[in-house]
Length: 519
Image (cartoon, rainbow, N blue to C red; front, top):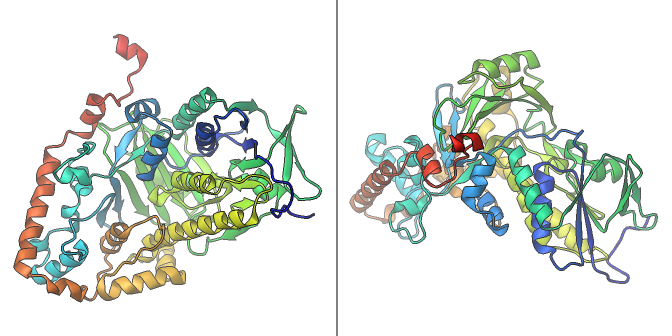
């Protein structure tokens, strides 16, 4: 087979076929239909109601807001339709040591002074006056201060106080989000076809996917195919044999059990991740329920034990039986192979510890629009797409590995393994730079910025030997006074914000069932 190589008669790429629905498929459909409005391009989505969708997490990170804004989705309507809540960050429990608790906030810590990173000034003040004088670094985070009090508000445009530093994402019901995007997509011209694919036909000359055939005999041809078929990778793997990079030696979790439970009360504006003996448990508060799950390694724990731990650590009674999921951490060797682009679980899987799953879909779509092809597809553009996605996956991978490597726990075989395991050179270099003088360098389009690395390093007890000497160029008394003022401002503003549940109701973001509204 001769792969398409960019040589030949140029033509318009007019037919996009999305294989699979769920969050990935309908995000792709909604985004494509937003731009394919010239009447000359078509978007077709194929899914089967007989094939269940997978959702191991319903939490996101702030870039999801820009995706929804691109689609002109009103935030209050979105939250109502998806039973969504706000998310200011993630609380981590039992990660450094059993009994430890820290918060990874969105947004920044404090304000840099004269171009010097705030955390360096905090490290200097902490060394000089101790924790009593400097306080916890979370005292200088608007998101942390609000989360601790269970409060939330959107920062108004042009806000003058530190409320402007609130950065947030969402928790939502992923099934309701997919349904919402489906309605939006179909209004914008996407054609949905119900059915299961039984045959994939490739072009005999180029090797590209030419069409797919359903069990009823219907054939759907396309120019570009987006594989959202989940772990199976119907096109990217079964048809094209792309291959997979296995990262399980660094991230040995390969199982998850998910179960909803009754809401215990007003929803917290943050996710919680609690470490157990061979993995961790998520807690995601929605308007109508709480999402829970136990991610664990089958090499260190059996399913019965994992299930018992999950159910024993629910705050309220479960609303269903726990549902199991198997996965292999890693990514496809190519996210874009021939004329197939993999999104979501078909492109790879990194456990949802930092809520990156939906962002990886979003980023894949943004890269597709930045490199959108015509026919024949250019290998140069395809290679650039693959390079960017590989870099992003590796960046997320390293940040997740950090949570396991940066532990002092030795109470189980699992924690001893991850504490002692070798790690990627890219991560080892970051840890070494931090241990020396608390330096964090973020480059290019890396997802997790400096404050995220600071939060996890300090939260899991990796303290630098020294602070950056550049911090010593500023007057100690003036810096201490400025820090005290910042700290007081965060606490004062947080205390004056509305409770999270009150905000959702007052803003019109709370879902009210029709019968309740009538009553």
